[in-house]
Image (cartoon, rainbow, N blue to C red; front, side, top):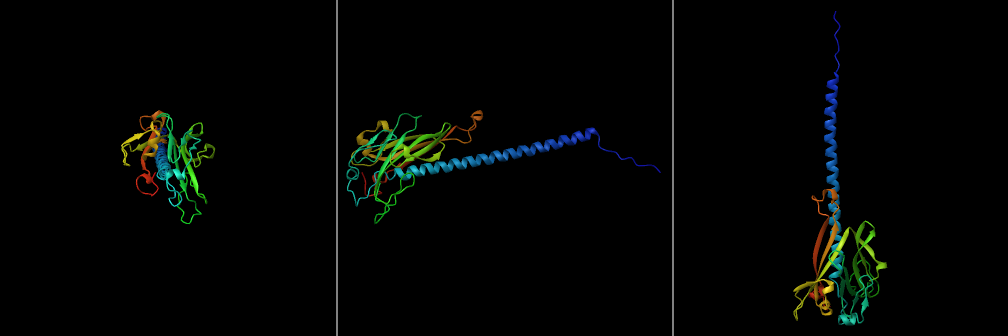
Length: 258
């Protein structure tokens, strides 16, 4: 009776099997890395879009109310704000009755945007419900000097800040990733009209222009979370978000037009 010989795998067969296994593992690893990168990019874009909406919504809600006051209490803007007031962040001042001001020093340096309004307080018989730029309210009637500006919370990051009283020490961080803030003021230069016919930066505005401002065009520059210096041709370094905000008091929405 003959004994059957059992034949094993040769060294070449084992090496081929190992090579095929490594090839498959490499493919799976590539798919995993691509999936993780795609998920990270989507998360970054979602976060960027949320920050864009949040930052612009905050600015929009405040700026559109610039010049507001309770007409049951005051007759005109100058009776609401009879004295000039200084803004500590921009270093500028609002004259009596002036609702807007700002600071512009260049396209690469962030502007400062200041919007003033007066709320009748939450303790009023009919509260107007207007909050300041950091989401606060007051029981008593209050004048808010809402000041938006860009600062660096750390050496390598930028953020949008706001203070409700024009004092930078009281500023609150609103949104991370804002590198620049540029503001243009829509002015009605023609007599007896609120129609905007030109946009000016703060350094171009005259005293008469501030009282004839009907809209504000704001551009926020965000740091692109997908940007990489080594792959600069694939993604821009910054993302720009622009909105034109109409002042309610100048467009007939409220009774307290300037």
